[in-house]
Amino acid sequence: MSFETEIETIVGGKNILLAESDMQGYLTEWRDKYEGRARAIIFPKSTEEVAAVVKICAAHKMPIVPQGGNTSLVGGSIPFDQGDEVIISLKRMNKIRDIDLEGSTLTVEAGCILADLQKVAEENDHMFPLRIGSEGSCQIGGNISTNAGGVQVLHYGNTREQILGLEVVLADGNVWNGLTRLRKDNTGYDLKQLFIGGEGTLGIVTAAVVKMYPRPKYQQLAMVAVPSVHAAIKLLSQARKMSGDQVTALELIPRIAIDLVCKHVPDFNDPMPARYDWQVLIELSSSATSDLSALMESILEAGFETGDVLDAVIPASVSQQQKLWSLREEISGAQKPEGGSIKHDISVPIANIAAFIERADAALQKIIPGFRPVTFGHLGDGNLHYNPLQPIDMDKQDFLNKWEEVSRVVHDITHELDGSISAEHGIGRMKKNEIARYKSPIEINLMRKIKQALDPDNLLNPGKVLPDI
Image 1 (cartoon, rainbow, N blue to C red):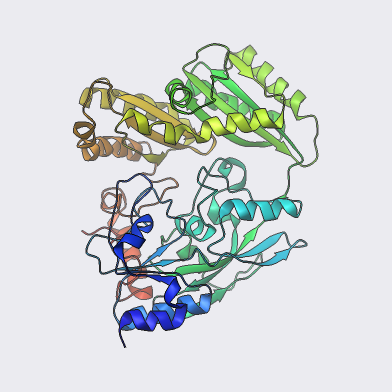
Image 2 (image 1 turned 60 degrees about the vertical axis):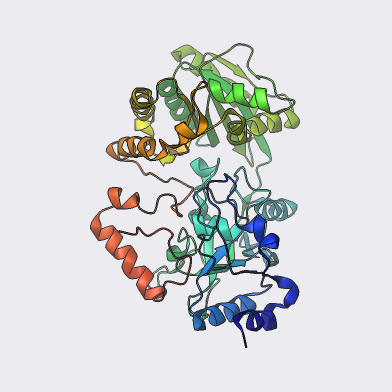
């Protein structure tokens, strides 16, 4: 019996794609930077089917690429171009298995769309705080496997902090059932932490127990103009003190980002009455305090007095708040029409953010005079998306040919400032060899030992995360 026939007996003929023309939507990354080929794309509907498929793949020594919503930005969910790998897509595994309102948890399958999970929480007077731009298409299994971040990490932490338990199919097809709802369990190694952020290289996450939180009944948003990045950091500190740590998001937005959104996205206008170099989007949330408007005004007044606030716009309705959040979410897409953009997802200690931007801008102007820095992101947790955009008069490919040189400069500065070259996007294919420059040999060796122990035949997402050298 052929490999394909064996798989069909498990998932059915309609749930395996073999023709290359049918696979295209699963073989290209959102940024179009990575494109691969696959022997087959398989769509199991249960953990049992995933386990059976993995056992067949293990018997045939068939490499596997687990895939969720295929929103990876580092090539982690894309096979290589040899065509000998199979993709296991979790999209059919999208059930909510359990809702525990007393314990404030959801037990969900890996293929659940993040936005759908958020909706279920809201329908039960709770919230799931993971908020990212791709939430309408990304899947919770992929969020877990990449330890996704988002705009509310400042208050709630990243995906790792939202997970109580996991169910994982291992490289040999065995299933580890770690779907605990316990918030305290000191009985040995916390095995789930190996798979959170593991990018599918150690096991395939098939289900999870995630935390829910009381749904904020009151929220207040403001777009605030600040004279500098340093002033934005001071505003964050002051807002957290004055609000009793009710700041749930603080996003840094530069002038160029607003200009690009207004230029390329229909129905957007600059929300500020004048042009400023730097803005922040600050959100307060509470389940109890209704008068967040007065609190926000007090925070802004204090900022005006210290000179850390130049101007501010407070939306008067929920729809206006959503419009401001939409502006922030459109920044990534608004860069595409402008040509080449070299993406970086870095984090540094908050106190070093201003120094990073100053040093990186100066260093890259020497390499590519006239480049346009699009620097935005989650100021409250030190995570910046630092995206050098090609000069207006430069050829796109000539600019993109400098990707490696530019990234080396950016990442060296990040490392010198005690930062990380990947804050929330992961390693994937893009950064797997770069981490060898910034992690110690002991760290790399420990990672290799873990991989060898859990996937000795290197069948799970091979060529990702671990450096080749």
